[in-house]
Image (tube, rainbow, N blue to C red):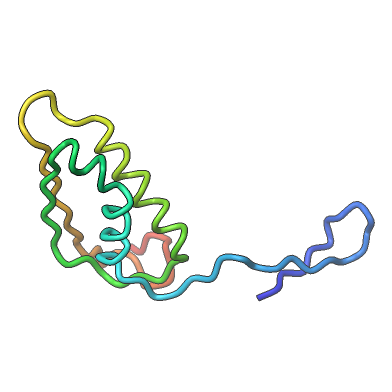
Length: 106
């Protein structure tokens, strides 16, 4: 998809290419990808993961992986002093939001 933009100082129109394409993603697969990338840290803290079924979402793959990497990194970088780290992941549907409309519905 191209986005016309007339804000350039030359005054002419230029076309900006959209680089990130939103596609249906299985969040369980995104989580598995992030866990594989962090395998050394996961093994070091002896992480125990329990993950319920996560939804299919429309998003850009790289951005979702980055989000999961960041969240997992924050968790793994602050493990408990004693015992093992247990991570429980779950998702609940919130019917106050429409599928492609992220504004709150009353």
